[in-house]
Length: 85
Image 1: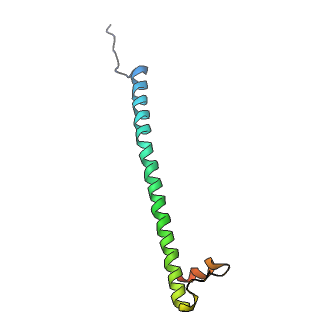
Image 2: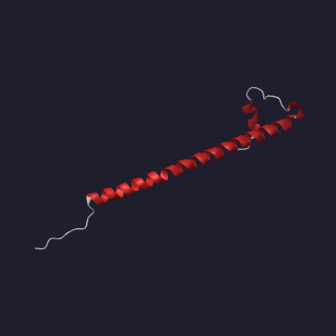
């Protein structure tokens, strides 16, 4: 009677593969974090630009007499009509 040997991975081989995958993920993860930070920075800059454009549009619509004045309380609500989403 002949013994049939099945080809299977040993526990050591599986642990080596898992360790390599963990190292690759650990190397790639910081780049994703950096990309997320850059994306948030760009998004914030775009929001600030939109707020600046809304302020300029509001000043232009109300006339040149209010240049340099502080917006009234609740100025966010008054700018909503000038922001295009």
